[in-house]
Length: 141
Image (cartoon, rainbow, N blue to C red; front, side):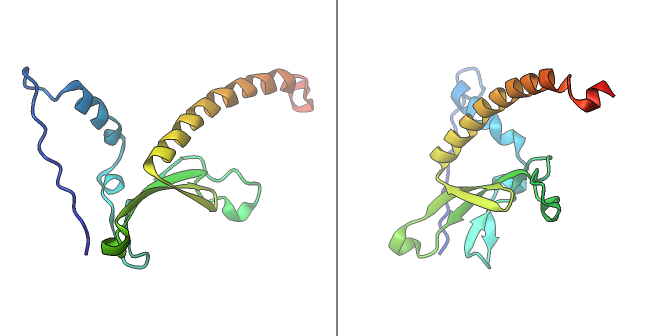
């Protein structure tokens, strides 16, 4: 039996607007489509899954057969199989090429924070690579 969680209505602030904390929490959700926010039953998996978010960059592996895979992707999976016995479990599946990590929401958020920090260091590393590339054969041709 699928569980549904009812979220009580949010009380408006004295100015008629949502409290700031709710507005901030709602902002990231606007980056997602309805299908990415709403897990639906996947009968083959036996769990509710959302549509994945995907990077526009395709897999960067040098193997040609993976060229159509997204470099990164993620989706919400809500598994309530045998919920009476084990309880419902919500995870975020993070896809990287052909591999998938199954993370609880807190760990997925930590991974997102680490990815932001990594992206900054990757940019800095690219700057260093650009300096060295100036002397490459292609740059001199």
